[in-house]
Image (tube, rainbow, N blue to C red):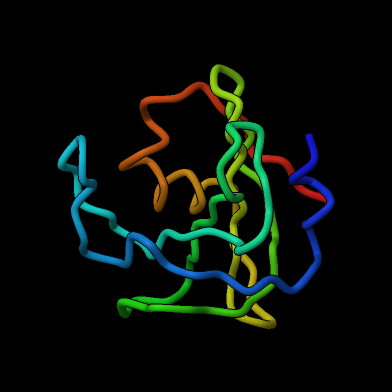
Length: 112
């Protein structure tokens, strides 16, 4: 799992699905800011995806700390969990805030 190397590091995120926007194919609403780390490659061949938690306004870009990885067991597409500096979140809260999308995938939360 290459995404694990990001845990504890600062990352810059570009939002392609800001808070409140709809998924272009499946129509669900993004309940958190969702984006990617530019110039990276994930297991699915696309840029590495990111959930930005702890921010309740729609964003275009964000820089924060990766505190965990959502590792999809049934899909080759890990997701970083990025928070503002000096904040933390429980695994239960990560599950709660990302379930709008992650409920469709078997996954585990990986910490450093």
